[in-house]
Length: 221
Image: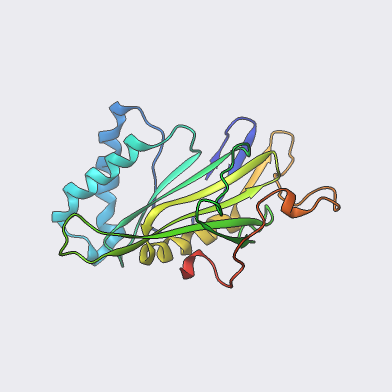
Protein backbone atom coordinates (compact mmCIF):
# COMPACT_ATOMS: atom_id res chain seq x y z
CA UNK A 1 0.00 0.00 0.00
CA UNK A 2 1.18 3.50 -0.81
CA UNK A 3 0.26 7.03 0.20
CA UNK A 4 1.76 10.44 -0.40
CA UNK A 5 1.24 12.59 2.70
CA UNK A 6 2.95 15.83 1.65
CA UNK A 7 6.29 15.06 0.07
CA UNK A 8 6.66 11.62 1.65
CA UNK A 9 5.69 8.29 0.15
CA UNK A 10 4.69 5.52 2.61
CA UNK A 11 4.80 1.90 1.47
CA UNK A 12 4.14 -1.36 3.31
CA UNK A 13 2.50 -4.77 3.02
CA UNK A 14 -0.18 -6.32 5.21
CA UNK A 15 0.59 -9.99 4.81
CA UNK A 16 -2.36 -11.70 6.48
CA UNK A 17 -6.11 -11.51 5.79
CA UNK A 18 -8.53 -9.70 8.03
CA UNK A 19 -7.16 -6.17 7.66
CA UNK A 20 -9.88 -3.99 6.14
CA UNK A 21 -8.59 -0.60 5.02
CA UNK A 22 -10.92 2.26 5.94
CA UNK A 23 -10.40 4.88 3.22
CA UNK A 24 -11.08 8.62 3.23
CA UNK A 25 -14.54 8.91 1.69
CA UNK A 26 -17.26 11.51 1.54
CA UNK A 27 -20.39 10.67 3.50
CA UNK A 28 -22.24 9.92 0.27
CA UNK A 29 -19.87 7.03 -0.43
CA UNK A 30 -20.08 5.37 2.98
CA UNK A 31 -23.02 3.09 2.20
CA UNK A 32 -21.48 1.76 -1.00
CA UNK A 33 -18.22 0.96 0.74
CA UNK A 34 -20.02 -0.71 3.67
CA UNK A 35 -22.04 -2.85 1.23
CA UNK A 36 -18.89 -4.15 -0.45
CA UNK A 37 -17.02 -4.73 2.80
CA UNK A 38 -19.90 -6.63 4.42
CA UNK A 39 -20.21 -8.80 1.31
CA UNK A 40 -16.57 -9.87 1.77
CA UNK A 41 -16.88 -10.76 5.46
CA UNK A 42 -18.37 -14.29 5.04
CA UNK A 43 -15.31 -15.39 3.07
CA UNK A 44 -12.97 -13.58 5.44
CA UNK A 45 -14.46 -14.92 8.67
CA UNK A 46 -15.41 -18.41 7.47
CA UNK A 47 -17.33 -20.53 9.96
CA UNK A 48 -17.32 -17.73 12.53
CA UNK A 49 -19.62 -15.67 10.30
CA UNK A 50 -23.41 -15.86 10.45
CA UNK A 51 -26.00 -13.74 8.61
CA UNK A 52 -27.26 -12.48 11.98
CA UNK A 53 -23.99 -10.57 12.38
CA UNK A 54 -24.51 -8.46 9.25
CA UNK A 55 -26.37 -5.48 10.82
CA UNK A 56 -23.76 -5.09 13.57
CA UNK A 57 -20.88 -5.54 11.11
CA UNK A 58 -22.35 -2.86 8.86
CA UNK A 59 -22.64 -0.48 11.83
CA UNK A 60 -19.00 -1.14 12.81
CA UNK A 61 -17.77 -0.39 9.29
CA UNK A 62 -19.90 2.76 9.04
CA UNK A 63 -18.58 3.92 12.39
CA UNK A 64 -15.01 3.41 11.17
CA UNK A 65 -15.70 5.56 8.11
CA UNK A 66 -17.39 8.30 10.15
CA UNK A 67 -14.67 8.44 12.79
CA UNK A 68 -11.71 8.32 10.41
CA UNK A 69 -9.39 11.25 11.13
CA UNK A 70 -8.18 13.19 8.08
CA UNK A 71 -4.73 13.44 9.69
CA UNK A 72 -4.41 9.65 9.55
CA UNK A 73 -2.51 8.35 6.52
CA UNK A 74 -3.92 4.81 6.78
CA UNK A 75 -6.73 3.38 8.91
CA UNK A 76 -7.70 -0.27 9.30
CA UNK A 77 -10.22 -2.45 11.04
CA UNK A 78 -8.81 -5.86 11.96
CA UNK A 79 -11.39 -8.65 11.85
CA UNK A 80 -10.51 -11.99 13.44
CA UNK A 81 -11.90 -15.50 13.03
CA UNK A 82 -10.80 -16.38 16.55
CA UNK A 83 -12.26 -13.48 18.55
CA UNK A 84 -15.66 -11.84 18.20
CA UNK A 85 -14.31 -8.29 18.28
CA UNK A 86 -12.78 -5.76 15.88
CA UNK A 87 -9.60 -3.73 16.42
CA UNK A 88 -8.76 -0.32 14.94
CA UNK A 89 -5.23 0.48 13.72
CA UNK A 90 -3.96 3.83 12.43
CA UNK A 91 -0.72 4.79 10.66
CA UNK A 92 0.36 8.44 10.87
CA UNK A 93 3.49 10.26 9.74
CA UNK A 94 4.16 13.90 10.52
CA UNK A 95 5.83 16.33 12.89
CA UNK A 96 7.38 14.94 16.07
CA UNK A 97 6.46 18.14 17.94
CA UNK A 98 4.15 17.67 20.88
CA UNK A 99 4.82 13.97 21.36
CA UNK A 100 3.28 12.95 24.71
CA UNK A 101 5.38 11.78 27.64
CA UNK A 102 3.93 8.29 27.57
CA UNK A 103 5.78 7.08 30.66
CA UNK A 104 4.45 10.01 32.70
CA UNK A 105 0.96 9.12 31.48
CA UNK A 106 1.29 5.60 32.87
CA UNK A 107 2.26 3.72 29.72
CA UNK A 108 4.92 1.03 29.85
CA UNK A 109 7.59 2.26 27.43
CA UNK A 110 10.34 0.08 25.99
CA UNK A 111 12.49 -0.16 22.85
CA UNK A 112 11.41 -1.86 19.66
CA UNK A 113 13.25 -2.75 16.47
CA UNK A 114 10.21 -4.02 14.55
CA UNK A 115 10.54 -1.40 11.77
CA UNK A 116 13.47 -3.03 9.99
CA UNK A 117 13.78 -0.43 7.21
CA UNK A 118 13.41 2.60 9.49
CA UNK A 119 15.41 1.87 12.62
CA UNK A 120 14.82 1.65 16.35
CA UNK A 121 11.89 3.23 18.12
CA UNK A 122 9.78 2.56 21.16
CA UNK A 123 6.46 0.98 22.02
CA UNK A 124 4.12 2.41 24.64
CA UNK A 125 1.38 0.20 26.10
CA UNK A 126 -1.31 1.05 28.64
CA UNK A 127 -3.61 -1.67 30.00
CA UNK A 128 -6.76 -1.25 32.06
CA UNK A 129 -9.80 -3.22 33.17
CA UNK A 130 -13.11 -2.54 31.46
CA UNK A 131 -16.54 -3.47 32.79
CA UNK A 132 -19.42 -3.68 30.32
CA UNK A 133 -22.76 -2.05 31.08
CA UNK A 134 -24.16 -5.56 31.39
CA UNK A 135 -22.60 -6.55 34.71
CA UNK A 136 -23.21 -10.23 33.95
CA UNK A 137 -20.43 -10.02 31.37
CA UNK A 138 -16.87 -10.57 32.63
CA UNK A 139 -14.40 -7.76 33.19
CA UNK A 140 -12.09 -7.48 30.17
CA UNK A 141 -8.46 -6.31 30.08
CA UNK A 142 -7.93 -3.86 27.21
CA UNK A 143 -4.66 -2.44 25.91
CA UNK A 144 -3.81 0.76 24.06
CA UNK A 145 -0.57 0.28 22.10
CA UNK A 146 1.53 2.75 20.10
CA UNK A 147 4.71 2.14 18.13
CA UNK A 148 6.71 5.34 17.61
CA UNK A 149 9.71 5.95 15.35
CA UNK A 150 11.20 9.45 15.30
CA UNK A 151 14.29 11.23 13.98
CA UNK A 152 13.61 14.20 16.24
CA UNK A 153 11.85 16.24 13.54
CA UNK A 154 9.34 13.77 12.09
CA UNK A 155 7.64 10.76 13.62
CA UNK A 156 5.90 7.63 12.42
CA UNK A 157 3.18 6.50 14.82
CA UNK A 158 1.35 3.19 14.44
CA UNK A 159 -1.49 3.06 16.94
CA UNK A 160 -3.74 0.20 18.02
CA UNK A 161 -6.79 1.76 19.64
CA UNK A 162 -7.80 0.26 23.01
CA UNK A 163 -8.71 -3.37 22.36
CA UNK A 164 -9.00 -6.61 24.36
CA UNK A 165 -5.54 -8.06 24.95
CA UNK A 166 -6.49 -11.37 23.31
CA UNK A 167 -7.35 -9.50 20.12
CA UNK A 168 -4.16 -7.41 20.38
CA UNK A 169 -2.18 -10.65 20.11
CA UNK A 170 -3.97 -11.38 16.82
CA UNK A 171 -3.38 -7.82 15.59
CA UNK A 172 0.34 -8.10 16.33
CA UNK A 173 0.74 -10.87 13.75
CA UNK A 174 -0.25 -8.54 10.93
CA UNK A 175 1.30 -5.48 12.55
CA UNK A 176 4.67 -7.19 12.65
CA UNK A 177 4.58 -7.66 8.88
CA UNK A 178 3.40 -4.09 8.33
CA UNK A 179 6.26 -2.60 10.36
CA UNK A 180 8.86 -4.98 8.92
CA UNK A 181 7.99 -3.97 5.35
CA UNK A 182 7.33 -0.26 5.94
CA UNK A 183 9.41 2.37 4.16
CA UNK A 184 8.98 6.15 4.03
CA UNK A 185 10.67 7.93 1.13
CA UNK A 186 10.94 11.64 0.32
CA UNK A 187 10.39 12.99 -3.18
CA UNK A 188 14.18 13.32 -3.60
CA UNK A 189 14.69 9.63 -2.77
CA UNK A 190 15.80 10.15 0.84
CA UNK A 191 14.60 7.40 3.18
CA UNK A 192 13.18 8.33 6.58
CA UNK A 193 15.35 6.74 9.26
CA UNK A 194 15.62 6.99 13.03
CA UNK A 195 19.34 6.22 12.96
CA UNK A 196 21.22 9.53 13.47
CA UNK A 197 23.59 10.63 10.68
CA UNK A 198 25.96 11.83 13.40
CA UNK A 199 27.05 8.81 15.47
CA UNK A 200 27.76 11.17 18.38
CA UNK A 201 24.02 11.95 18.71
CA UNK A 202 22.67 9.74 21.47
CA UNK A 203 19.48 7.90 20.67
CA UNK A 204 17.92 8.88 24.00
CA UNK A 205 17.97 12.53 22.90
CA UNK A 206 15.60 11.63 20.07
CA UNK A 207 13.04 9.50 21.87
CA UNK A 208 12.18 8.85 25.53
CA UNK A 209 14.50 6.69 27.53
CA UNK A 210 12.48 3.51 28.28
CA UNK A 211 11.37 3.23 31.90
CA UNK A 212 10.67 -0.51 31.66
CA UNK A 213 12.96 -2.73 29.61
CA UNK A 214 11.43 -6.05 30.58
CA UNK A 215 11.69 -8.72 27.90
CA UNK A 216 8.85 -9.16 25.44
CA UNK A 217 6.58 -6.90 23.48
CA UNK A 218 3.02 -5.68 23.28
CA UNK A 219 1.88 -9.00 21.95
CA UNK A 220 2.91 -10.63 25.23
CA UNK A 221 0.89 -8.31 27.45
